Length: 516
Image 1 (cartoon, helix red, strand yellow):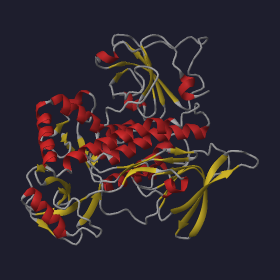
Image 2 (cartoon, rainbow, N blue to C red):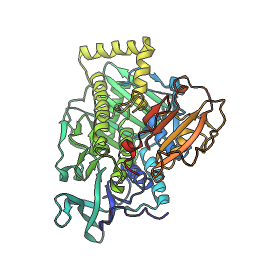
Image 3 (tube, rainbow, N blue to C red):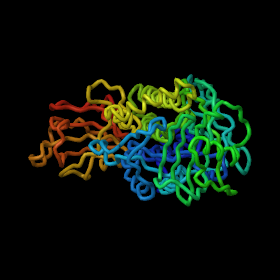
Image 4 (cartoon, rainbow, N blue to C red):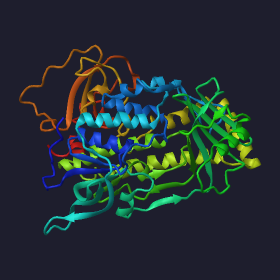
């Protein structure tokens, strides 16, 4: 597939330089391409790391893949798990109730490495350049002759053939916690450093538990164990005996084994093998003060880091990318309404902060070896067992389905579910969103016949928006009380509602889609 045209017309090599070829950078580049601009991915590493930091994909992230019609690739390989945990407590969070809200009421276990491979394959299908061994060492704004404002960014890039200068309209920093892009842009990374560390490993077990996933909460710490395929298990241990001990060197097999024995009373038959992966994980928690600094945008770990309680980081970063891509593309293509690109920070910063607070709360439960901490964990575990509503609230937050963005209309800002449609160009609402454009959906009553085309003399509010808007008229295939009175919806490319009406009000297209 050919790359989209350069809408900037200013001689840039690319519209957007995406720095960092992990899952967030790959997904952002794919979304930018769909939105009609020219991205390039710059990855400093020669090859992908063999081990995976993240394992968990939550329902909202699967939905975002489904918005583009590619979720089946992940579903074909991942393992659905119908529950999750909060702070590794014994009473787990059952996701079954989410079946009323989503087609994906479970967490999907798939190693991050495989997610990256699937995303790279998809990027290749789209024809987006992905350049390995391209390390960004500096960046600076470029000015048009006689202009007061910067019109782009120059990047110094070390490549296998020497240093080059690459010019782009914008730079997206998806280059991790030690982001060179964030540092070059002068954006503060606010928060706290590590005050304790835990250990984990991907190892062989000769006596694993029968269940594919196990969480333990003991007086001496907590443990998380999950099968990751290939005869290996991820074992993560929060060992109160070593939690605050200074440890600068690499983790040893004996260190992981000893901590597992102390917390679980068994080492599950751990075998030391040359290809085992061992790592330390600290509780450093930081967030970028700004997700946008002029023509520099930040996403993923470049924008926020936290202890991986619940495995939320990958999902948070991918959702950053979905939110950012269509807004940045609208700015580049020249139709973005005022303030649209700034809304990326306004919408995603609070979501990142909420995940950080959730992680800190879990840390407060799992990493408190005091008598008070043990009592708190025990009490909170009993609350989870006795209060289904609390479990459901925590599960909905983990799932990502609870995210809602500020909007003027009461219904605006909420996620749209993938409702089945009748007499429509696509079978579901998500199917209408595959082109990554806005969708203006007029809803008929289930018994109504399709509307005739309006008279040629009638004003058409959507005229001139074909490059950024899909129009459809359909009926819902099933009864949904909360949507029964809705006559029309305007849905953003990221699957959130911009506007809805129960009357015959004209859609506010200029507010969201600019001028035709």
